[in-house]
Length: 336
Length: 123
Image (cartoon, rainbow over all chains, first blue to last red; front, side):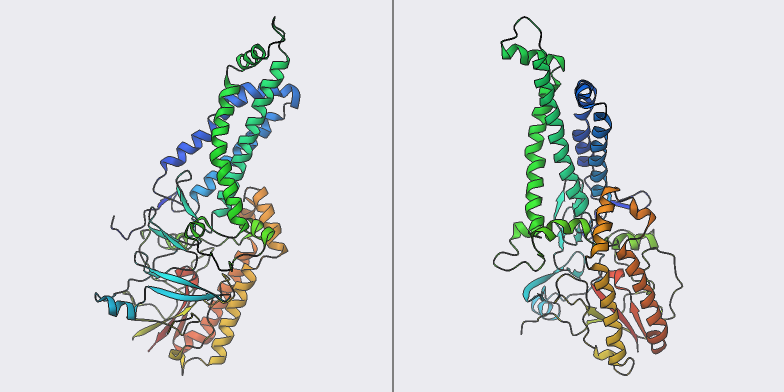
């Protein structure tokens, strides 16, 4: 694998994309589901006499939601930008900077930003896009590369990631709540010899659940520090319409964030944003034998999202990349 | 037959909305009139604006999508996809009627990740 090739993995005949580190995804799946099994068997069995037998399907539904959103975040294309045509840049750095500047300035609602040239992907990155070194792709509205999901989080799968962490936080609180209720209710039912001593009531309650009602809450509190903290952090970020990457680099420090629409609209936006198509999967569907991360020319002028294969145009492209490529007089603010 | 490629860049003055620069490229002199070109790009910008604006339809689709675990979109196209299908048809129609007869091809910007619209000009 050369340094320019994408490290993302395709699966299921080119329908899904994930990052190269899938092992952590399976680990996270086990860490979410494994503690719920003793919870369902022991704690729910006791609690059903207080909250009806509906506790079983509700718990299974919540676990199902966590697992589904985790899967969707892991297998969806985060918004990988397709590679651009290869460009020959001169060795002389002064000539290179003159003919092919490394940054271009762009005005967004009166605020000036820079778009950088990405050497690996051969494109000027779209605004808010960053190159992920783990997957070796430029990703639109790059948030971060999440090892627990095994994929980058970008424009297209941010909503699945947010839903995943919010439902996992809710699930952790749900399990914690029921375990504590289990301890308290069991302690109240203690009919042994020493009813005035709280420690013997407590020990009786723990024994009733084979000690799971203390193991699971400890695990939940540890998980809550992590997942709950992440949920709170992303709640803060999405209310300010910033990505993790922009927060770390302080892109909007001192300037008004042009992407912010207001507190409530910012919070709702990730869930109602348009469902952009996957540019990279459009290419691999048309040409299944092409490798991910290689530049391919547009074979025809229609790129139907539903891919029903229209006829090729009369102006057919030449097999090698066209000799001259120039940008039109663009609206970018070019510094003199 | 030499093919010259002109890239029409994105216009970010209205934020992150996908809009393209309406300035007339000089390489089209003699082939496409500025009026025709401006009409095409304006209509393309209209399609993208309609596709990406959040209105009541988008909010309802978003809510139902989240509740149905996104299986709703297996049965029914969302607003963005429907608008983009109309955009694809418009682009094909413009290519057939106006551009290709004069030796110019408009390449769909979805092929390069909505970074720029390519114009392939035959010389």
